[in-house]
Image (tube, rainbow, N blue to C red; front, side):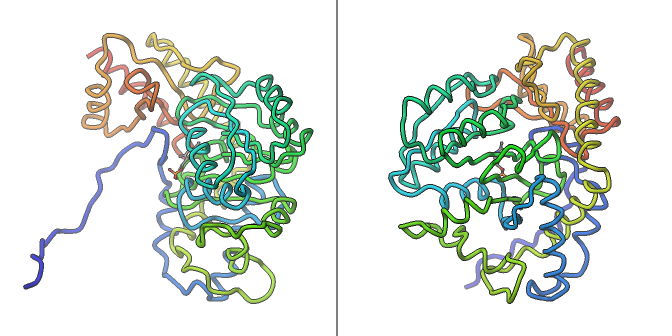
Length: 378
Ligand SMILES: *Cc1c(COP(=O)(O)O)cnc(C)c1O
């Protein structure tokens, strides 16, 4: 007996406007690129495209790191790649936690057998430089400092330049989460001296989800190559991935690259390079200013103080009289508009309105303000 054939028609998704914490709206140009013919992952034409993706990513990350490429998996896998390669059992790792993603870093350190030292800040606040400095002084021998540049769970941006400088002063490597910052606010890997960073395709790059751009300094690669213990993850072991993504010589089979999603990432990065990083940063800033003015005119207030506010992730307090789930449900069913709910400590208390990548445009700002106005004052 065969299992019943369910006979299900093709899936046609509804058309939404995506203004949550990611994915963001994907431009048609990127979707068009993704439906081009699939070719082999070792095809010379494909390898040439991989090289272009690497150089476009070096521009996006502002780095000359030769090891800069997209991991064939979402941002969480980029995070895991950084930790499993750079943390060895017994290594002391300083983790800065000011939201959901710092907690995930902590979870990674524990699973790598690292010894976590935690610096905590309230959700909605940036990482305290003074506390990190104190923790580095109090705990000799910290091997790695890890922090989230742009906390998507709260909308707070931390001072990556100062954090990286502290790590260098104390001889520690840095791991930076720039999933939400890349393409939206300045990410200057070489200037700041970051050793390992990971991002995601679906936030300010406005590609589809499922790819994680990463970059590693030569110093970080040397550390990985001199590990005493092999990396516990086979798939994420940089020593093996290097043979696939390295530019010179023969590529060896490691896994089958997600060919068509990579066409999409290539197109997303071409779009970014056409616009230019500085223009992209100022567009995010300008759209944020407009959204902020509109939200404040509706009586809504921001969770994060102005100096640490991310333009691409706007957290606002939900007014007391408003039912969170009902209001968001209405935005989705009546306006086809997705905004983000609060996470963890902020669940039910805040909304997170994303202005990421292609979603950071005039039409979206006007549309979002109109929809929220209607839902609040029905
Ligand atoms: C979205 C996000 C991640 C995880 O990315 P996924 O693609 O969902 O795995 C990690 N860190 C931050 C700051 C994020 O916003």
